[in-house]
Length: 66
Image (tube, rainbow, N blue to C red; front, side, top):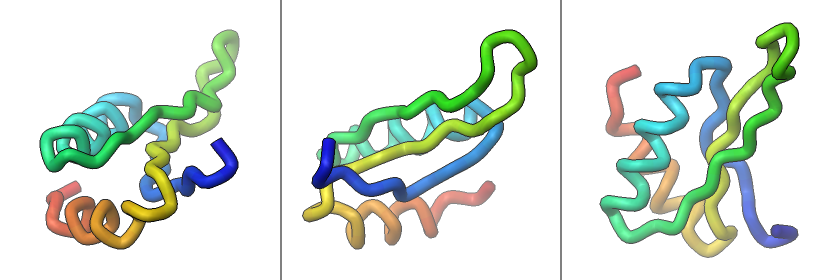
Protein backbone atom coordinates (compact mmCIF):
# COMPACT_ATOMS: atom_id res chain seq x y z
CA UNK A 1 0.00 0.00 0.00
CA UNK A 2 2.95 2.31 -0.42
CA UNK A 3 1.38 4.02 -3.43
CA UNK A 4 -1.97 4.65 -1.66
CA UNK A 5 -2.72 8.09 -0.26
CA UNK A 6 -5.26 9.29 2.27
CA UNK A 7 -7.97 11.48 0.71
CA UNK A 8 -10.47 11.66 3.59
CA UNK A 9 -10.18 11.37 7.36
CA UNK A 10 -12.96 11.44 9.94
CA UNK A 11 -13.89 10.06 13.33
CA UNK A 12 -17.38 9.14 12.06
CA UNK A 13 -17.49 5.72 10.45
CA UNK A 14 -20.65 6.39 8.43
CA UNK A 15 -19.00 9.35 6.65
CA UNK A 16 -16.00 7.24 5.70
CA UNK A 17 -18.29 4.49 4.40
CA UNK A 18 -20.24 7.00 2.29
CA UNK A 19 -17.05 8.47 0.81
CA UNK A 20 -15.74 5.01 -0.02
CA UNK A 21 -19.05 4.04 -1.67
CA UNK A 22 -19.15 7.24 -3.75
CA UNK A 23 -15.58 6.70 -4.92
CA UNK A 24 -16.33 3.09 -5.84
CA UNK A 25 -19.41 4.26 -7.78
CA UNK A 26 -17.06 6.54 -9.74
CA UNK A 27 -14.72 3.64 -10.59
CA UNK A 28 -12.04 4.64 -8.09
CA UNK A 29 -10.78 1.78 -5.95
CA UNK A 30 -10.88 2.88 -2.32
CA UNK A 31 -10.11 1.23 1.01
CA UNK A 32 -10.89 2.13 4.62
CA UNK A 33 -8.19 2.22 7.23
CA UNK A 34 -9.75 1.94 10.67
CA UNK A 35 -7.55 3.52 13.31
CA UNK A 36 -10.20 3.53 16.03
CA UNK A 37 -9.37 1.97 19.37
CA UNK A 38 -11.85 -0.85 19.93
CA UNK A 39 -11.94 -0.41 23.70
CA UNK A 40 -12.21 3.35 24.04
CA UNK A 41 -13.74 4.28 20.66
CA UNK A 42 -11.42 7.14 19.83
CA UNK A 43 -9.31 7.55 16.73
CA UNK A 44 -10.12 8.02 13.09
CA UNK A 45 -11.12 6.37 9.85
CA UNK A 46 -9.20 7.11 6.66
CA UNK A 47 -10.23 6.55 3.06
CA UNK A 48 -7.26 5.79 0.84
CA UNK A 49 -6.93 5.63 -2.95
CA UNK A 50 -4.12 4.84 -5.33
CA UNK A 51 -1.80 7.75 -5.98
CA UNK A 52 -2.92 8.01 -9.62
CA UNK A 53 -6.53 8.68 -8.48
CA UNK A 54 -5.89 11.25 -5.74
CA UNK A 55 -6.84 14.38 -7.70
CA UNK A 56 -10.00 12.83 -9.13
CA UNK A 57 -11.00 11.49 -5.69
CA UNK A 58 -10.44 14.85 -3.98
CA UNK A 59 -12.62 16.58 -6.58
CA UNK A 60 -15.44 14.06 -6.03
CA UNK A 61 -15.13 14.31 -2.23
CA UNK A 62 -15.16 18.11 -2.47
CA UNK A 63 -18.57 17.92 -4.15
CA UNK A 64 -20.05 16.00 -1.19
CA UNK A 65 -21.92 17.99 1.46
CA UNK A 66 -20.56 16.97 4.85
